[in-house]
Image (cartoon, rainbow, N blue to C red; front, side):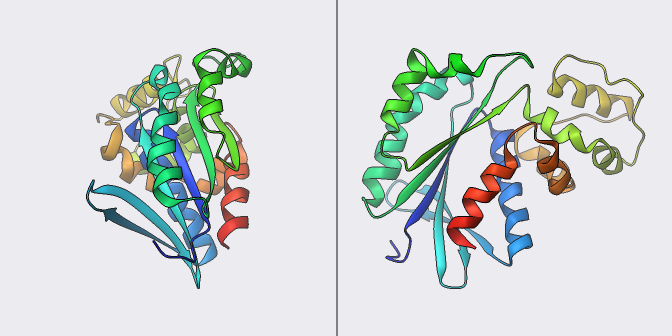
Amino acid sequence: MNNSISNGFAFILEGDTEKEFYLSFLEYLCRKNGAKLFRTTEEPTVDVVYRLKKDDKECLIKFHTVNTVSQVPRAGKWFQTQCVKKYGSKVKWIVFLCYDLDDYNADISKFYEGDWAALRTSLNRADQILDVAAAADIEDVMLQDLSGVSNYLNGVCPTDLKGRKGKTKMKNLFLFNGKYYHSGKRARALIDSLDMEKLTRGNLVPLAAMEQMITSSIF
């Protein structure tokens, strides 16, 4: 490992669409600050690691996707083995817990109880933990730039988006324009077309806090 690396950012995510979103957000920060994001693999596990670099400063970016919110509390072992143990005590880690509240009125305190409390204990080697808690789907965050989604579709937006949660709304918006919405990696082109500054100002998830944590470490 490059001995100049002293900071790492660990993203614990529900699904692949979230990973693509935060990768796109990181690339937006790079463009904004004149930095570069590199994707590398590390032997012997072929572990994918991203490195954010500007001038002579560099930090690690790691992603762990669990596929369902019920599996997020089990991510502590990954953090201990693939972050803390693997890179040693010189790297200070900030953990971004990216999960879905499932309800706009949900009380975040339940994510500090039971298995979630055990997860936070297992993350005790993290320098900081940021709850990147969405009131609904990551698609709800994306739909804050509704005009951007419509422009991507080369279409129009109905006056009332049908559906309770963002993913359903996004699917219905695509269908309204005669197309199909695909999540995961296939959503990346859509995500890249959105106005990240607008999404940050929307504050549905704490992108501004995430930006401040990252930029203060590397830029």
